[in-house]
Image 1 (cartoon, helix red, strand yellow):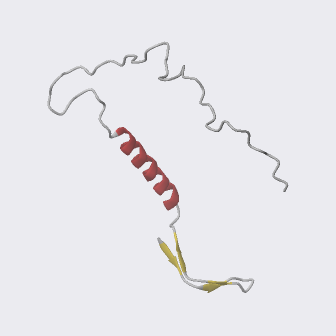
Image 2: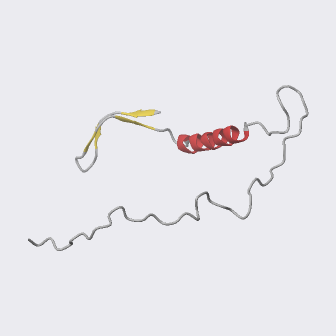
Image 3: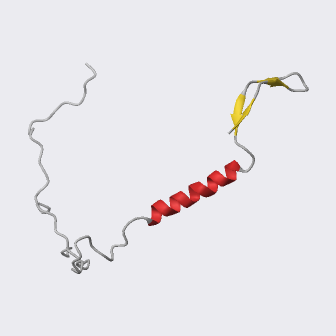
Length: 93
């Protein structure tokens, strides 16, 4: 990184000391970051081999659903109110 010393612009604005990237460094860093992302993305195992050397086949996916779907206690009657006496709803007094 390039260190820029404090200076005063032509219009009188004072610029504090700071650092900035060298010319072309931003592009180089973005290319390097892209390559790193690709390497990390493709660095995983391919799944074709195994660590212990065996050649066991992985099981194929299969459906485990049972149709038609039945929910337990679906045919139960709806709950009834526990209060059997009339409740006065006029609460104005």
